[in-house]
Length: 143
Length: 70
Image (cartoon, rainbow over all chains, first blue to last red; front, side):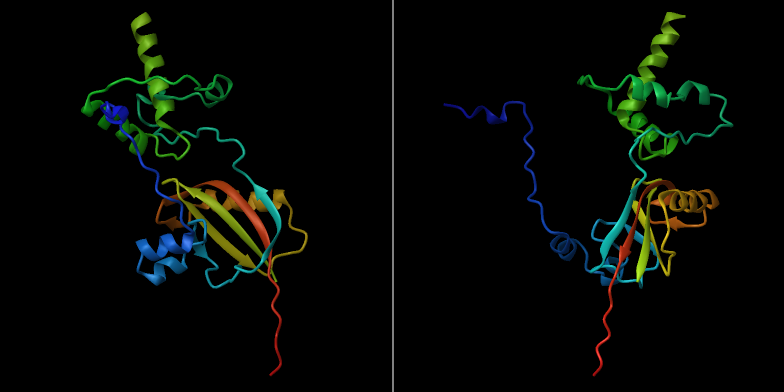
């Protein structure tokens, strides 16, 4: 009997999770670079010499509760309004339906360009851009 | 000694931190938030992940150092 595990399904093997120290030892040899990073991979810009490894957290403030998309586009661009993502609408009407489509490689390249260079923001996701693009195209065709 | 650690998200999606020692005892969330907003607005730091873009978190860490007399 044939093994059906490989029929059109790409199986991704998960790498075992390692402690930070082991990952760093295997991926970086430069100790100077390692010293400027926390355990959670934060780059330390100032106060690198202050040792807090054995300290206890007295207070913790979390400012990233709302992952509201923030636009970072050139407002001088005439076409800016076409690319506008309404962040309130994104939150009220969440992107919760999964769909899978095939795209041309050049289209994927365009999407990557939009993500990296037009919306240069960690909170703007591919799904936000695709959703906005479809809505823009829909409005355009309905005119 | 109390240390204030501010963590920001950069334009590249990475985290960047700034540590301050000798901070006041009565620091609250609002004061820390305002200070972080000012740092972002002034845009004076450049990180490996690009510019500081948004606030992620902040924490006050207390470290105890005991001097040994030898």
